[in-house]
Image (cartoon, rainbow, N blue to C red; front, side, top):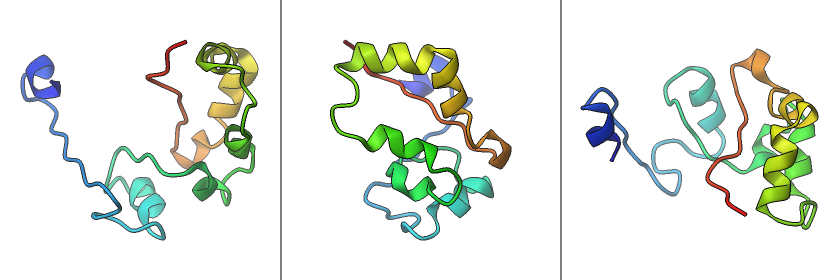
Length: 97
């Protein structure tokens, strides 16, 4: 789908189950731009910010709409941008109410 929509300008390779980088080095690879996208557990970011642990709390948001409403707010954006200085941007995507 990416190839079709972007006419081959972007190449995506998926490496499931930590096959490319293990848990201990995946964030370093991200920071070194060896990889450009990672979907690790938020607990892996704890050395950069404790703020993202908020999203690991069960039942904090009533539903996806409540989560989207929060992350779209000024405070939500501040939280997602908590480690921009490290070159890491947080975002919430693909959730529907």
